[in-house]
Image 1 (cartoon, rainbow, N blue to C red):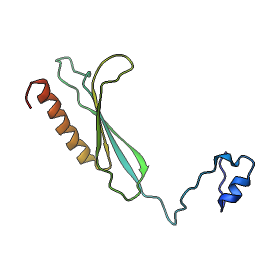
Image 2 (image 1 turned 135 degrees about the horizontal axis):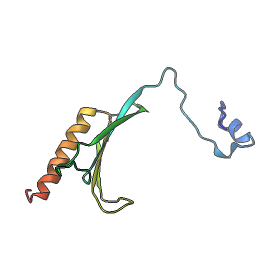
Image 3 (image 1 turned 45 degrees about the vertical axis):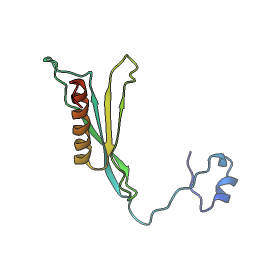
Length: 115
């Protein structure tokens, strides 16, 4: 159950008031933008053994006005065994794809012994 109060004191005096949370009130509509998420699983290959394209999707999120830099990380933790995947996220789809491309190229060069 969720209730809104005009002050913290009123919220805390409400019987289920032990989970009080302060939120910002907006004067207008929220700025909702797509947050892009790309996942490249290096275990996924086609019949010829080539890497499959990454999976890219987006979800709508509140945009707070700050430009979050693109985030990426590599992981080798899978519930069903070893493997490596790359996750890239950010507000700018083109930049997410650029970071993925750069990271993928580095990984493939590393496999070939190129630095």
